[in-house]
Image (cartoon, rainbow, N blue to C red; front, side, top):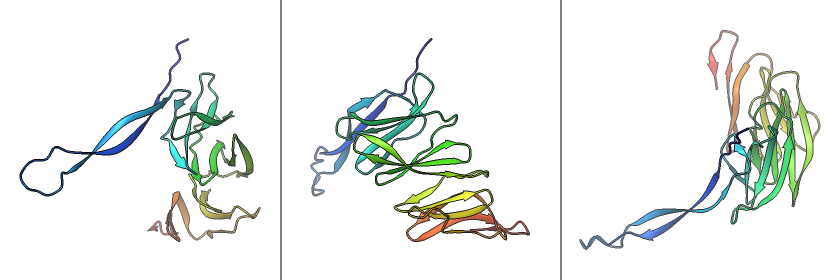
Length: 193
């Protein structure tokens, strides 16, 4: 059996002075220089790396086929924590500080908190409806659950609020400061934002 892997190369961007043109244009222009600082090849990556809480998070499949989420030290690429999942689909993580939300199965999200060397499940979100990719900031979580936009305060068990049946929400919500944006359709089929 041939194993495949996807290396993650951590690039550092720095600046270096460009050669002076000698035309009296003032200070020499700066240009960016990238160099490989380290690489990681423990998973077949299924999405871009995330940076949260001062760490790099990667997700993908191990050679065994199980999905994994790993926390890497940004300076060296050393694995600080790794958790395996039996999820059939990619984890599609989203992070805020030391919390990470992953898609653990159809209609199921798990909120994990990173504790020095391991992830601890803080809580799960289960629904018989489809769940969108969440928008997550601090203690607030927004997602589409079925046809409704739902806000969860992570300190509470029940949802803080959900949109009424007058609008059918589609896609995933997006956060911009204190505003939440979501695409919705009214009874006449007109799009609303």
